[in-house]
Length: 166
Image 1 (cartoon, rainbow, N blue to C red):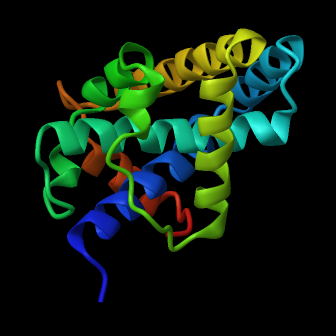
Image 2 (cartoon, one colour):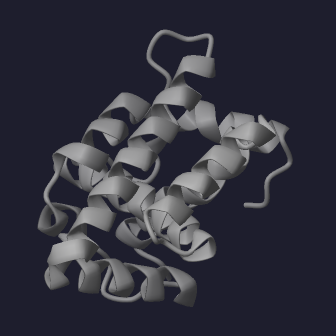
């Protein structure tokens, strides 16, 4: 049986997975993001996967800080997640994660982010850039919504309408 904490992580991970496909409904955005990643010396596939996990970590950190259950996660405002992506320290993003992950890809990506955070130097700069890119993505998606303070639930509904895999 899975705990609420594991379910919360899975909801956060899903949010991270759908952000870029939703943003890329305007194909030129994907081209620009990939150009930036290349310019920064970050492999595109690795950078985009790290952005997914970075978004999940930011959402998870805010949900844990505000004591949201997995069932309440959809009420989390995108602006709070965007603020966490650039406003929280690496250790704050990594705190309180599940001990094991249902998806091995999530576990590996979290470990890579953890290594980058502890390595410092150029890798810390890359994490800062990825966090800024995640914030930019969240801000753009929020601006597309017709409600004043869009939530994770609004993004989930949009992902469902776009037939993105759960």
